[in-house]
Length: 137
Image (cartoon, rainbow, N blue to C red; front, side):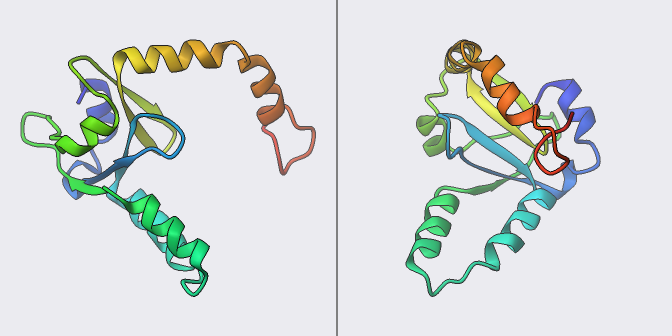
């Protein structure tokens, strides 16, 4: 873990993390245990007598693993998850609000480049709403 991120996470390092496959990108998502538990409480409210909900829960949690940061600040990522994310040698650890994304460096740079083309439109659509419910401005 980079020192800067490790410092930011110092209050939750001992609780451990859950690492899982991202839904939308070919990267991994690292959840502090507290964040994972909040998410699981929300998912636990889904009606499990609906097939769609069961399918979603199964797919969302597939491959999720509990991991811990060792005394040297290292995080051992299970092999099946590194294969999913095509992580080879160089990685990017990026903050994504309440979780951390773990990327292969080349895939991260490609995703950023691909998103740069329409980022202005995306920013306007997501953040530029005039009402209090849908935007920050």
